Length: 350
Image (tube, rainbow, N blue to C red):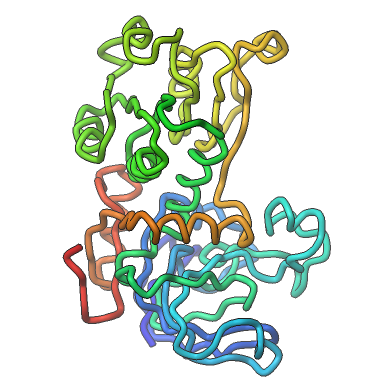
């Protein structure tokens, strides 16, 4: 089969022909329908030097189960089922660490928990293998070739909004209006929330406005934007601010946008520690929460909500042979939509 792989010694993305993987103990083989490129995939360049062979990239994938190892029979899935794939393998799925996130597993197998696409072969290939616990049922009504972004970006965006625990009619600021921010806006609107988009890129603001944001501001060209928030929200600011950027400036913008006792939702991950003072928390200026893709148990709620409200990711289809160019575009930040490689012929126009 053909696969997009990262060759760390030569720092290149290659299209290689490799054997079709067979499911091991407790695993499913999946015929991949589509995989999408995520900014986190670029972390391949800093993955451990201990992995020297070319590794199949990609951790956002969907497909149909094509083989089941005998030890994974009777786990609620059968050959032909449409699934999304979670991507932390070789964890025990049961310890205290796994309850938080599979990467924290305290009882891992095969040398430690690994993220597919970073520490083990991922999903930019015609076939993949996953631990059976990582299968998430995908509603038949959803266009499978468009749904791979749901299984990292979408679930993360859903959790970021859902865990703010807001009531319909309340206001949330989406800070960083790229792919995740756009999905978060759609989830927020489906939950009945009012949305303010904040980004230093006016093009992203235009897109998030089209996506459903009730108001948008560019904090770089309009640094006093927060003075306009009371007219919109009836309070000092918004009830919650979810930050999808990894810049400290974005987190400063979030604090400026929040009402008293608002929720600062941490999603974007700066390389250095965030800056805020203890008294801001202890005196109730704002509360701090965090969200990620979470666990498989949490993720099914996001998948079901997506199907109920038919939130279809906005994607652009590319060919597997274009992966080196896709990698370069993602690295330069020029990609406006999630880039998807479809391994099925039908590409729905939904």
